[in-house]
Image 1 (spheres, helix red, strand yellow):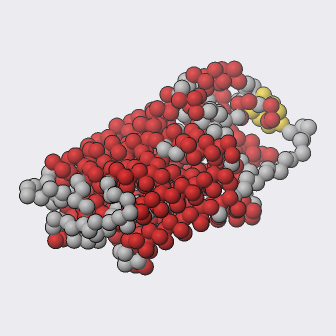
Image 2 (spheres, helix red, strand yellow):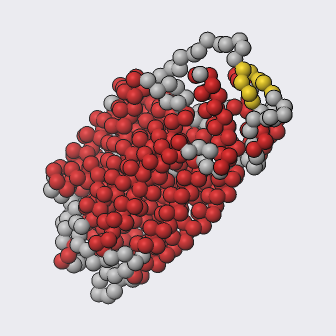
Image 3 (tube, rainbow, N blue to C red):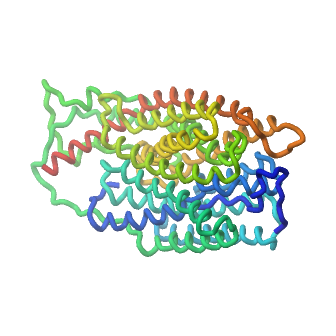
Length: 503
């Protein structure tokens, strides 16, 4: 590969090429916990492209790429990771084990092809690098989907937020692990690090075909007289309104009736069944498009900072390499945010008081906007603290999106449905983190420089735009929260029913 030299002395680390390091309703028993341990390891090895903030800046600047080209490579990696419809078809129709095998092959192929480019065997171009990262990202996404979909089946739905949060936290924590390995074990030597990541990640993702398994639910004997207090039947109205995506108010339907008591057999009551939509049905609902916009803005704003962290540090007066610790802190608090938001959204599911999964998602989006407004003014040394806060709420966004998708549109087609919805994150990555940020960055570069910008003006307008967009997304999210409250009434009642059955 050709040698790279930056135009400024403070950026002379640029001999490295861009590496986005890759990354139910059963009973919770010892066996399912063991399965989740394996799935957690898979998530950790497959989700480490977030450490791009550590390795990415030196790469793009070293090849004299513009900021738009640097972040375009990251956008390709995000596209492969977030829009994973082909690999989701494998997961939904052939199962998690076959998906693990195919994902391991894609993961290794992406890294192997990139190594050919890095060593000079193939001609180097930022679009070619982006294509290889997209292949790697597809393999990473396959490991993610196989782990999530398996555990949606193996664990009780009352703990769905926490289970998804724990798995997603491993996906996010991998950036801390791999960026630390890159910095301290390989001392910034890229070729050896690429070999390590390619082999280690491939082996772990492939191991899913051995260890991952959906645990069959133990059927309980039918009880002839098992009855419980349920609301008046409104099946026909509910079914019609669910198909049309209309607003359904369950305040009368879900609260126990004092004057008129209606008893019904639990297994025969259709109002306890959550909605199930295939991808075509999902695309016909207004809820999908509202969530798509809110998720695109929330995730895209997080990626504005993650994908451009190295450039932000330099622009604000820091030095190249200062972002390494920030990436590690970001990863840790991103992990904590995913677990915390998953747990809290499970614990405080109270649709009567308008507390649903979407409520916590809206809080995360709103706080993301607040953080972006602060980033527009913050001095470089304060970024250590603010990157932790931003990472915490960014973790909440990525933790709650798959939970919402599985609840609003059902777990049966989760792989395909979430792959389509996850395209929102890829759109946010390119639209906000690449196009908007890159263009405004280039405009603020002072001559004679051509690739490096200095000063808060480099990103200030970007942060003003993204914080405003988060405010708009928050308002849309409130509307989505109102529209989907009927879904969480169903899950709330299912919890009550399950508790009575256990008693």
